[in-house]
Image 1 (tube, rainbow, N blue to C red):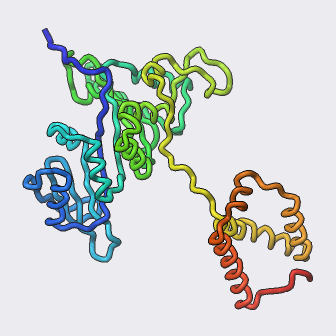
Image 2: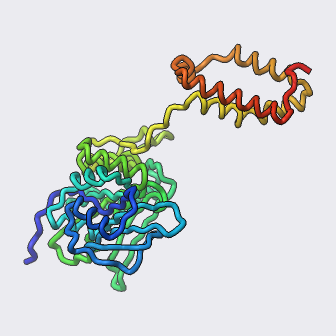
Image 3: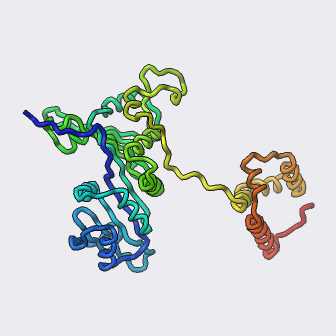
Length: 355
C-alpha cells in the first residue's frame, strides 16, 4: 500500500530571485557579500567565466554571483541569481525569505526578477478546465496572449500540461502547470500537485518584494490578488456584452477565497508645470505654424489662441496644478520660455505678432 504524504492545501514559495547590486566587486568583496547574507563563503567555487555580460562568476551550490564589468562599458555592478533549485537549497537550511529580501534591500539591491508561486495540493484548479473556459471566451484577462501545452507519451499518458499567460519578455508572466507531471511523480503518494507561478520583473518585482518585506500581504494572498487582477474565469451561464459584470466561476472564487485584484503598477507621477509647457511646445507648435502658413495671418492665429484660453474651463487636475504651483515651478517655466525666446532672437527669426 502506497503511503500518502500529508500536505497543506496550498503552500507559498519563491521560485526565482535575480537582483542587481550597485557596487563593483572582486573576490574579496564577494566574500564580504556572502557574509552579509549569512552564506557560507567557504563553499564558493569559481565558475567558467561570467554570464549576462559579466566577466566572472562564483557559485555556492545553485546560487550564482556575477561580477566584473568589461573594460570601457558602463558599470554593471554585481548580480545575484537564485534559481528555483537554489531557492529550495536555501530553504533546506532553514532560510527566512522575508529577512533575506530585507537584507538585500539594505545592500541597495534592485530586483530584476522575482517569481512567486502557489503549490496546490488540493486541486482547486484544473488546467484543462481553465483552457476550456478560455477557448469558449468565458474569461476576462489583461493579457492578449495565452498558450496551452500538453504532452503525451507513446502510450497516450499525459506527461506535461501548462497554461501560460502573457509574454516572457514582459514585466509579468503567469504559468499554471502540473508540477506532479513535471517532477515525474508516477505514484499516488501525492494525489495532486499544481503550481501557479507569477514571474515579475523590474518595478513589478521590486513592488512585490516590498509588500512581502513589510508584511502587507502573506505570500498566498499576494499571489491570489495578483492573479485576480490579471485574469478571472466566468460562470458558463453568463450572458450580456459586459463580461466584467459576469459572475465568476464558482471554482475560481473558491480558489481566490475573497481576494480582490491587486495591481503592482506604479501610479503615474504628477505632471509638472514644466512638463506641461514642454508638451505644449512639442505637441501644438507644428499645428499652429501650419495654420499660420495656411491663413497667412499670424495675428489671427494668436487671436484664436487667446480666445481659446479665455473660453476654456480647467478640469480639477489642471486647476490644482495651477493653484498649487510653487515659486520654483513658475521659475522653471519662465526660464524655459525666456530661453526659447532668446534662441529665436539669436538666430534672427523673431518677428512682430501682427502682420
